[in-house]
Length: 124
Image (cartoon, rainbow, N blue to C red; front, side):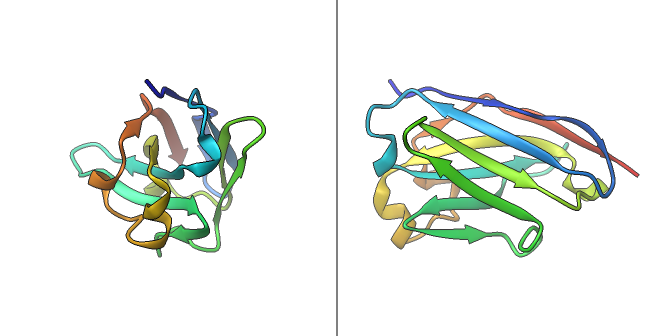
């Protein structure tokens, strides 16, 4: 059973930065497509970024957020810069099969493993 544990969320002022981390217990982490999604109160969970062969970003975060991974540490990161109040949400880490990275990394239902989420709050 693969487990994902996020950390690094918190409260930050607009314009600030945070780095989220997601530690994975899977033995074949390097083969997974890893992604971040976020869910604001009362809204659906939306794609933010993915890493699997290539990197992918939602248009709302492109140029501000960077996804990266350290396969030796079984960890994926999300560096978030120039944060805006509309970035406020619970951020979820997700893992799925490697082929997602070359087919459709944007869909929630492609991912098999999810973390518990970490709250990010951006004040204006």
